[in-house]
Length: 86
Image 1 (cartoon, rainbow, N blue to C red):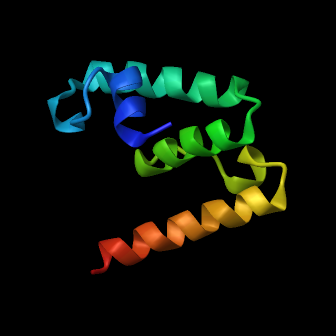
Image 2 (spheres, rainbow, N blue to C red):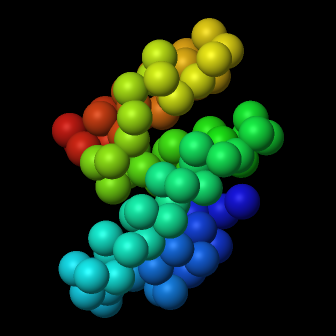
């Protein structure tokens, strides 16, 4: 999975600035459903990552059963936060 592919799949474009509010709500809803149904850990992490970047991610203890997945999510959050401060 790559970010552009996920954005195209859920929002029809890789540029969210082009997306209407209604399309963004619909895409985010479908993304949440797919995240909830996904059983593959790596795909689930990718979906969670996109939800996080959209400000819609569930809490780590709800999203991930494995501590290693929660730690990877924390690392992603830290990296994104550091890049925002640069």
